[in-house]
Picture 1 (cartoon, protein in one colour):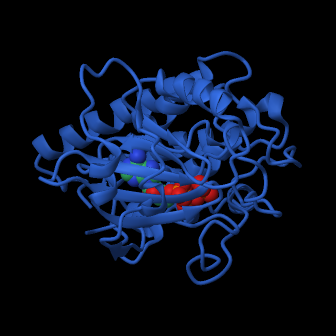
Picture 2 (cartoon, rainbow, N blue to C red):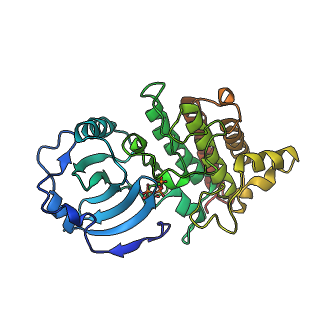
Picture 3 (tube, rainbow, N blue to C red):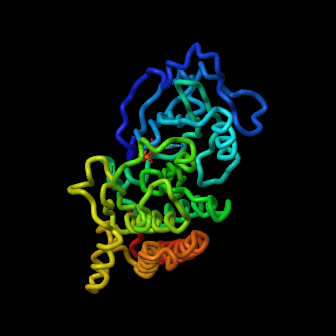
Length: 336
Ligand SMILES: Nc1ncnc2c1ncn2[C@@H]1O[C@H](COP(=O)(O)OP(=O)(O)OP(=O)(O)O)[C@@H](O)[C@H]1O
């Protein structure tokens, strides 16, 4: 499995203590019949995808190979069942091509599970920095940024208070063909307590955010901008990786990129994999400019996610046109 976060394989069910509780999986949406039940899900072969601040995520494959699920075992949930259900139902009603579908939930005294469609081929973080890191070309990186921007812009479309609150490369799951992406972990902060929240911020957190629970759309734009800079530079931001970052503790990307650009060494900021790609230099600069605007210190100077989405859309269109031209032209193409 390329690019996948480090996984531990286990065939023990993800939630064995649930058996005998008498409670059932609750399906969301208008599924005509229950596609599987709790016992089937608990018998599925499961592997740990990662342990995050809100709990542990498993990949579970049901008997027969279908469907493949991403099961989130939440920790530190203090909401009564009714309130939990109302919030989960609202999350499940959000359907978008760039958000993993939330299909079911389970609530008992001991266990709270969310069941999502398993999507993609691993997180952006693992594709950029993991042991199976891949050489992604510029257009691929820009397409991943566009897909993630669409997911976040859709969330923001829910109203001025709607925000994700934890945008980072490990929460962006890249599609198998590397041409799209999904934004994971939306809404979990509204379900769990604060015990798991890290005391210190990571390099994705906007400077005005002093309390991780106080999220905003402008803070999301900042975090998204850091992801854009990460895609362009290939560098991990501060405290973004479990081991502290490849070869160190990561960098303050927004500050580092600005200092290099000020010194007029702009071409030095790009990941060496994309730095010498022909024909797309202009689009690379436009995306860099956008990443810098998103990571402006002052929230009011940052663009909205709708604007970010529209600008990346144009960058991708122009880069794809140039890449097509370069392949029909007979010149060197921009494959990784
Ligand atoms: N629906 C999904 N389909 C496929 N992979 C997923 C899905 N949801 C999450 N993942 C993957 O599972 C991994 C672990 O997720 P989890 O949220 O538990 O930890 P995290 O994202 O590393 O940390 P945090 O909780 O701080 O966001 C993610 O990095 C992501 O790659």
